[in-house]
Length: 116
Length: 113
Image 1 (cartoon, helix red, strand yellow):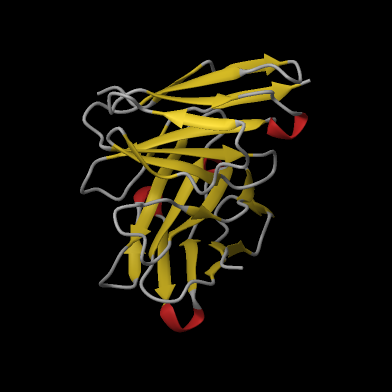
Image 2 (cartoon, one colour):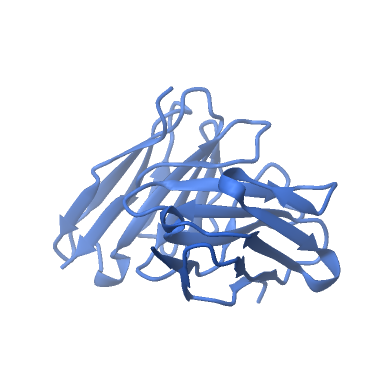
């Protein structure tokens, strides 16, 4: 079945450590890719998105992601995490050929805990 | 401006009861989506509206689930004869016609006893 996979379900880091969260998708064709974040007690909010162009995308709060088409991957990175990055991170894909229907297919999420 | 709002924030229902969950999208947003998020899972698509037209309801898990958006603004997700497996957070999101970012509400946490 077509899907979105996030490899790490729980990640624990110390402040200043580097972060990389994996995301792979199984759709062929042109896809739109997203990373959303949910801080404790808050709404889902967009971190960054990729539609086309430069495969290295920069988002808010120092996050970036790299689209590698040949690997069907869209991994999220941050060089130095802070305690305030503690949150749930979701990768999502807008499947191809969906027309105006921009429904998102989501990964299971990665829970990140950053220790001060 | 105001974001997406949902009500109620929490709902406890006895098995077999009907429930109605409300979503107020951002003013002017044409697209509206409902997602279901079970505990420890990612959101799963339920249904999509463009204005008042329900263009995709492929994610609704059964005919007990019904959604409407009669005037192209507020939307209601109704679940009839609730079952325990319906317990989840129901998320509403809206987006502008030409935009691809979806703006999410806080969700309604439904617990069916």
